Image (cartoon, rainbow, N blue to C red; front, top):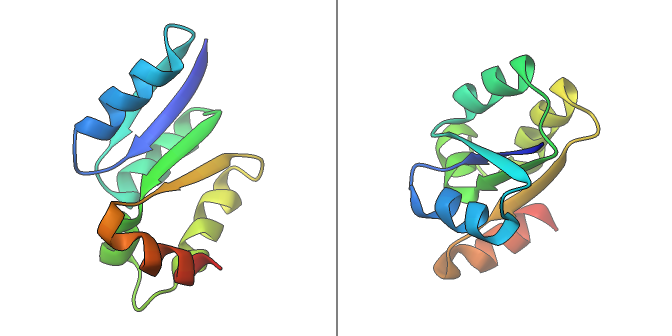
Length: 97
């Protein structure tokens, strides 16, 4: 079974992702970047979906790319998908572009 890690303080994203991917995937949830890093050290995931709000709280300024590097340092081949609410799309785009 393939595994997905969803990093968000909200419950809705993990439920939506589970519905989209279906039975062939296990979805685990972390509510902080530190918790997500600990989970990545213990288990291999195929994908990480992370809410851009998590980066806003854990990274000074807009150093979002540096925050992504932390994930790739632990697990270099992980696929990371950054989630954003509609009102944060512009900030997320500018921060990662």
